[in-house]
Image (cartoon, rainbow, N blue to C red):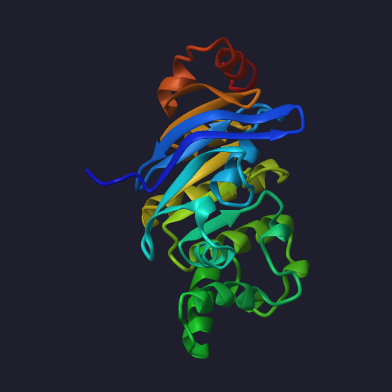
Length: 257
């Protein structure tokens, strides 16, 4: 059996007197999508940022099975190596696409930067790949030289997805990737993500408050309340037969009967 691609052990984070994450353990396996769900303030985004090396935890460790360096302690890496991982082996899809794009350069340049980070240098090849990825995320090729400022919110999110996935990352972190979008736009983004995750055999950690999104995209769920994981299991099992009272409340209040 293969080793987990990402592991957390005893992970904890506080902000003053507030516990954002407490004693969290899990393994993420290659090709698996893990969902982290819970209400606002439950600690799920803090956990995601600790896993991705964007926040330093107060306790515990995060280990990543890197193609470049072998198994590494994410928070023990130098800043330069962590940045290199984030540009090559990892992707991070933000809820607000403006945080994940360079708004002052063209759509093609946004995609091309990721290709250059993994060694691409031929302009024609980079542009052809950018055009191919724009098509894959349903953006017209004649928009390649437009800046993201000229795009709608849904188009920006699709461009951010293309920018993250063009370099064939091994692991993608997603923070509410459909949050703040119109329902019809959400459906397109979800359909796109589901297809790409399956086609590319990605490992991913998805934070969402939407249990419908979690059911569609994830294999396994962790339910968080007050910084702690209160339930953990296969997605359908957790949503169809929730064991913890908090999970039961979430399912009853959010999922249609």
